[in-house]
Figure 1 (cartoon, rainbow, N blue to C red):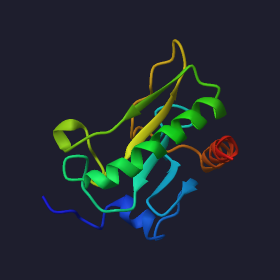
Figure 2 (cartoon, rainbow, N blue to C red):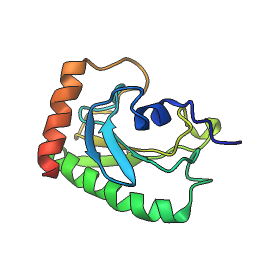
Figure 3 (cartoon, rainbow, N blue to C red):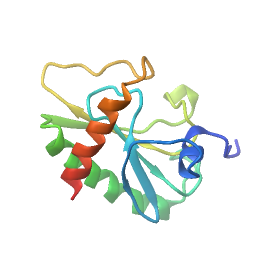
Figure 4 (tube, one colour):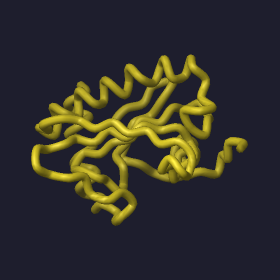
Length: 139
């Protein structure tokens, strides 16, 4: 299937939809997931269009993975997490719901399961506060 530039992440990248941004460079943007599975759930989205990992340019992947690691390390610190889960889904059968390559970074806590994704929108004030915590840890 061809890349559809009307997906929500493409719109965020173009500035058509706001986000709680925590990081941006020439290759990618990181922002808070509006339907988090754990407090501090962030997304890393490359700026180069691709549907998912299956059709991504390997050079783009090589530039994105260090950022995924950087956000994960900062997230563990910012949210005093016991661990971090990183998820990346491909195609509908693989759990993908937004067809622009992206990585989920979710702080994890002993004894606390992840919440169901896309269950409910998080309060904007909580997202803003979490974005500030993550930005501070990245500084």
